Length: 165
Image 1: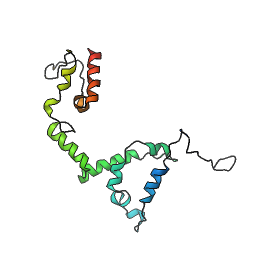
Image 2: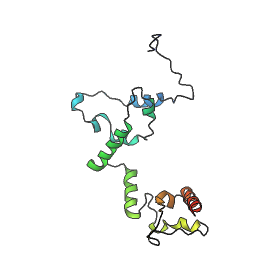
Image 3: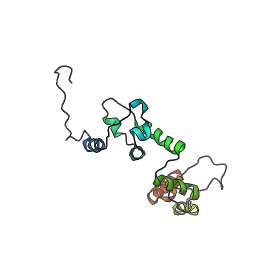
Image 4: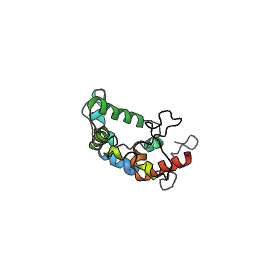
């Protein structure tokens, strides 16, 4: 309600300035169920939110941007995920596969450990020493898995080496 006129403001969903979240809200509303138990006895995990709902959040924070009371619940969802993984050992299939690949090959895609440094061959003669080759380094460029294996990210790694050289 507007303080002076006493009328509720009409929001125009058709403008570019407002993200229309009505389809998402309708989809979520269709899955709502009434509970038989009092709220005090209801468990958050399983009773209010399912594991599928917790893992389906993309953590984009759009819901926080649109929330009229400014709730910041994405951090809570991340904490719920942490609880599921650490306390209950529950991880979605894709996450299990990525963690097994990290354990076995040192990267989430399961690509060979031996291929991690192949991107350095493409730096056009600029040497890229490893910590093993130069333990007394001044700067360390930690490339990580994306910069080592992903073709697009390799370009970024090579460009940074050229700039730093």
